Length: 89
Figure 1 (cartoon, rainbow, N blue to C red):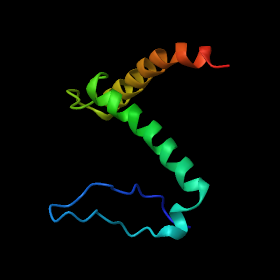
Figure 2 (figure 1 turned 30 degrees about the horizontal axis):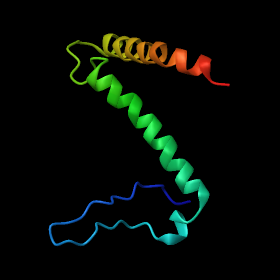
Figure 3 (figure 1 turned 180 degrees about the vertical axis):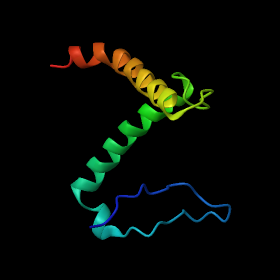
Figure 4 (figure 1 turned 90 degrees about the horizontal axis):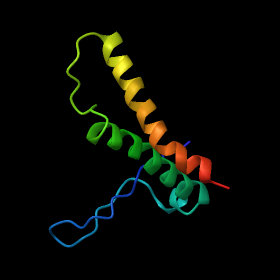
């Protein structure tokens, strides 16, 4: 089993593209492309939670309060996505 790491397409200062340890045997399969799309979708949730949902720096004490804040933030994200999900055919 090979982890599906995102390939960084940025260019170094020397002009050479950055490389990763993943070779063409992994990236040529359709499952890798699907995995990267799903990965981006998951990262969007955390990005929204940090910028809009108030989860960047939690100002609460105690694991129970932080857990409740996280669940509340994700519930807000679900409410925002709900119209788009209901409109899907």
